[in-house]
Length: 220
Image 1 (cartoon, rainbow, N blue to C red):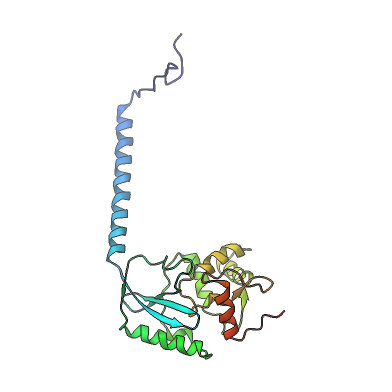
Image 2: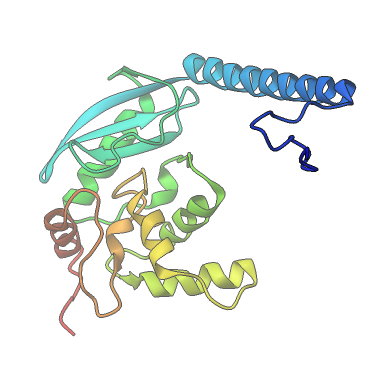
C-alpha cells in the first residue's frame, strides 16, 4: 500500500503540486541574500573609507596610544598591549603627531601624572560602541577624581535609566572593561563590591598605581 505521507514513504522527497509557491520562495531567498550582501558591502566600504589618527605618549606607567577621528574627537586611549586594544575602531589608523588635539591631550596627561586634576571636559571625546556601553561610559565620566564607585553602584544607575528593577553587575563589568578611552574616562575608579581591584584591561598593577596617584584610600 502506498504511504499516505506527503513525501511518499519510500525515500522520495515530496514534489510540490504548486511549483509557483516554490518559485516565490526561491525569489524571496534570493532577494534577501542580495540585500544582506549589499548592506555588508556598504558597511565595509564605509569602514574602509573612515580614517583615524594616532600618536604615542610616554607615561610613567608605560607607552600610551592616543587616537582621534577626522573631526579631532578622541576615540581611544590605550596602554600598549592592553586587552581590547583599538577593538572599537572601524577604519584605518594613520600616525599623525602634529594634530592640535594630541598636543592638548598630552598636556592633559602631563598635568594628570604630575598630580593635578585636569577636567575631562577639556577633551572632546566620542564613544564608538553600542548604546548600552555608551550609557555606562557616560557614567564613568562623572566619577570624581580621587573617588571610587562599585560595579553595583553603576548597575543601579543604569537600572533607573532603563526603568527596570535590577541590572547585572557582570554586564556592567563587561562595559567598563571595554572602555576605549582610559584615564580620561576613568574606568580605573570602578572597584568590586568590597573595594577589591578587579577588571582593568591594562592590568591591575596600573589600576592600583592610578588610584595611588589620586591618593584614593583603599583601606576599609
